[in-house]
Length: 206
Image 1 (cartoon, helix red, strand yellow):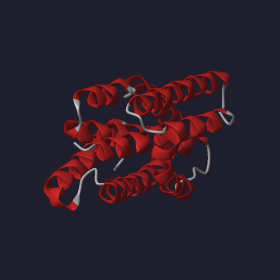
Image 2 (image 1 turned 180 degrees about the horizontal axis):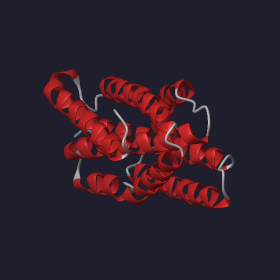
Image 3 (image 1 turned 60 degrees about the vertical axis):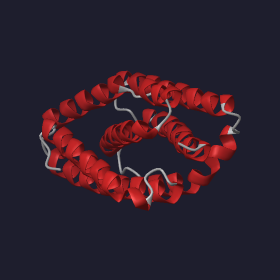
């Protein structure tokens, strides 16, 4: 793969991790319990550590991390503006959906990367964070079954926006160029299947 491909991928990853840090830090303030606040705070710290790892990789490759992130700033900020949670419950669902879909997407694209970058992508995946969020969602739904229909609808909106965002960024930046449409379609289909499976595990309709 060309250096530009790698720089762009690392750039969007770095800004995604920085945005996740900011989002989780903000959400933590509205946590219903101190335990939840501490859990989200810890996750925010991990996201910032991931940001530093990706930025470090960019610097090692001779690329300015800020310059690598800048082309994706407006698009990612716009995505988060369009999917602003109405409350704590929606913020947890958003964190879970975006975290897992992003992990699936980067894992798929990592097949096209050089070994050091592929290893970095694997390193910053956070199955532990996803498990924590999944268990918190299960607990929320068990304690208040009325949330199910609302969070199912919210989850459907989130996945639609996330898949559209992934395709737009992929095509615009050449991660999955038009000439590789079959691969792109396979990736998007896999993201959708995985999301549906995770929603079913929560007892929600995707």
